Structures are given as C-alpha cells and as structure tokens.
Length: 156
Image 1 (cartoon, rainbow, N blue to C red):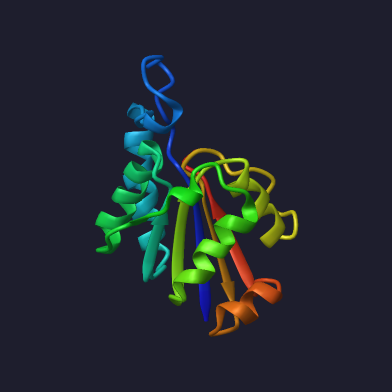
Image 2 (cartoon, helix red, strand yellow):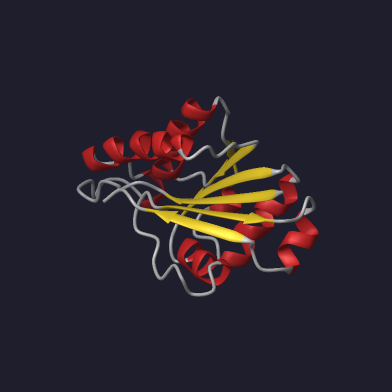
C-alpha cells in the first residue's frame, strides 16, 4: 500500500515586513497547531517513511514538528517552495518510500488535494492534513489510478 500525506504549512507570521516570504516564521497559532496535528495524525495510526518539505522557514518548522513526532528527519527540497501540484506529487514519487509526507504551500497543495480527492477537498487551510492511500505497492501504479481512500483534517 502506498500512502501520501499532504500538509500545508502551519499559520505564518505576516507581521515582519523586514523578512522575505521565504523567511517568514510560524506565528503563535502555527506553533500550537503543528504539534497538535502531528499528534492527531499519529493517533490515526499513520506511519511515515519519509517527510519532504519546502525550504521556506514556515514549511521547515512545520515539518520539524511532524518529524519529531514520527522520529524522522525531514528532507528539504527547494523545488517544493511555491511548487505546482505535479511537482509536489513528483517529489513524493521520487522518494519511492511506501509512505511519504509532503509539507509545502498553496495553491499547489489545494490543487493536488482536490485532484486526488475527486473534488472532495476544496481547500487546504494552514496546517491541514490530507492522507491518500492506494491499493498498490508501486508509486508508478498509484500515480496512474485514483486513491482507494482518503481523509482530511484541519486544525479547527
């Protein structure tokens, strides 16, 4: 079984005009939501083999909370910063791990989640988690068919 977990980065701090978009940190809500959502995902029984994250500070920090909970070191990928849906999916497929998490940004996250859920997920708010499972052991097969099941959780 192949599993893809999409996580949009937690809420970031817009109150720092001196920082570039890439360097925006999480705000207090984001710092609260990320570990809580990591715990909820673990409580759901999800196993992870790899965590990929955008190099943006808000995505790296969100991924670190999930990595800490799942005992994994997130892999940073500059191509995930502002990436379209196809790049996000390609990054997961390239890892060839049975269960991959991707932590990145909108609009790519919402577009990919909406596509994989057949329109069931209309938006990925900050720190939302969408999980997709395929009845296949190969990512190439999984990428060619619809997921067997999916779930969606948001912090609120």
